[in-house]
Length: 554
Image (cartoon, rainbow, N blue to C red):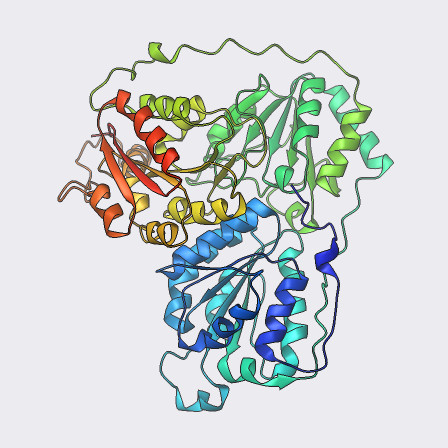
């Protein structure tokens, strides 16, 4: 996977004598290595749409809702490590995209979000669909701006993209007034103004880090998404093995940051300080690498890391080092290069022996009716190619996904951050565009799927062979779990029903919904039907929906 901060031939600045603002915009995208645009077209976006014919290297993927386009661009950026682009339609369209922009911000996804804006000469007359787009976007992005003349397009594009690609990376927003992007300018120099590459840790920091690890008999490593984003996946495995460390990953994460079946793997970090503290209690050192740490749900009146426990933090940028903790050692450096240098300093030790895989048929949920998510995921994993890329929004079924699939390499797993649902189906569009030669399967709960069901049409329209697997438990199961926790914390002893958390009146029919969007679907209620359905879907080389009826909490 290409690192996001490595230059290549696509990143060279170049200039032309005179261009329209829309052409400067497109040339800037090409210069900065963009390879796709996701969008929902509208009238004020005509300058961009009219330019697409001249830029076949920037294919446009049409979505029927701005949230779908935004999420597809977010996952595309995470899968490629490069700038992705989304184009939405004026104020209501930007509003539709805001929720997924929040997800992109939490995922540190370098996405250039654009929206068409009405002719600036009419702004005092409050034309149809106009609003202050910059003010709307600013809370959920790193930077937002609107050029007032075609002369400002090139420098504002350079600044926006530089900020998007500066760690921690994230979305930026550019408003596109229709008259500005139709006007001519001689300011046509499109410069790839990327941030300087962060250097690896120096010898003194590496020596101090190695000493901390040498003094520890039971280190814990907390691995964030930047481990994979900045190329530290393989080195982290060697470090964990040589230090006999336990490696934990974030509860919500975009990437697989450590192999889930490795003997050193400790699982996901919980969402409450008390359970995080209990998880870390056996360890005598905590090493945090490349993440926000921690994203809690419930308040606990205790620290997640006891103050007397040694703490070391490695981050790609200084912003993160100021969050939540005061480490004994803080290192701001290129994570991938630093982990490689650290691994080379540690003495080699025999790799820990892998545990014998558990017999899944012994699981108590193997023969239940309706089918358990555990059984469904094992049948699904057995039917898919070994190099399948999973886009996961299984939520409460995630432990079953992790038990069934082997995520032993980077970029085999993607998921959404921020906690907003609906990212799975839409995100799979961007991942399939990024990995055109891979089998991509989206695993989603039924409630989550309804937030971005229009993604099925985009897959059909562009012949993207995503396999959409929808686990239909006909309830918002995660809300029931969280209501149980709420009642235990605030209303102990209560045992009331779950209000408004069931999806069975009427039952959602994903086979019919798929057909309405031009995608073939099948509903499955028996485990032995999953394998043949997967084989048929993959053989078609077309998008397909498999709705699997599974047990819920009720």
